[in-house]
Length: 214
Ligand code: AMP
Image (cartoon, rainbow, N blue to C red; front, side, top):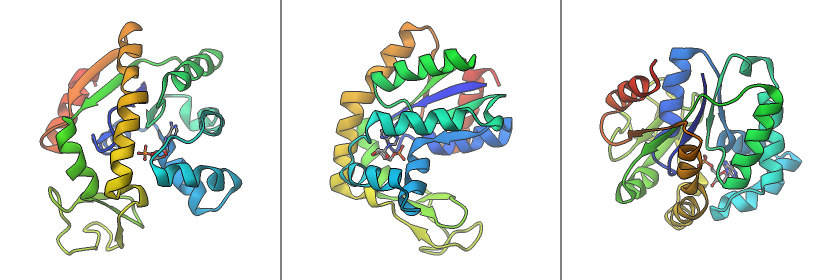
């Protein structure tokens, strides 16, 4: 399965992607995760990306496209992949189409995870991630048993720098202006599918699987 996941920040794309990779044994390619790793490792790419990420703005297309192309060329992507958080604008979507055509890896579907705007703020401000295993929690909806500690591995939970309120507003604005138009982009190609991203994670996942015919 070759899939793009679309949805606003906080829609739960990452959570659904993680469940899909468990079921399908294909990699999740999250440009946000790749960029955060580059920032943490203080690579040149990370240093370039950092200031944009802190402001909630998109990192320049040239930086992201090179990163995705390199990742898609790796062996584990040849049977399928889930792109999470990429593409983020029409220029990236067009570049992706060209890239995939030249690699003969065209998309099967673009799946939009839809969550009302008013729910997104609480989801993002409440989000906490485990430093060790990446497990995600929400202090409002799915709190860990012990505050600040991962239920799965005991690791420390942290709040992403760009999950602070001012940055979140900017990220939602960027989503509406630059990323939401991709819903029409993929609809016009005839590969758009949508699911509601509201409610229980397992129920959403069951809908995702049914919608994708898995
Ligand atoms: P995410 O984890 O997908 O919410 O991404 C976090 C931040 O990384 C975004 O706010 C952007 O600054 C940057 N980012 C992630 N993916 C992209 C992308 N495809 N294009 C540009 N910037 C991105």
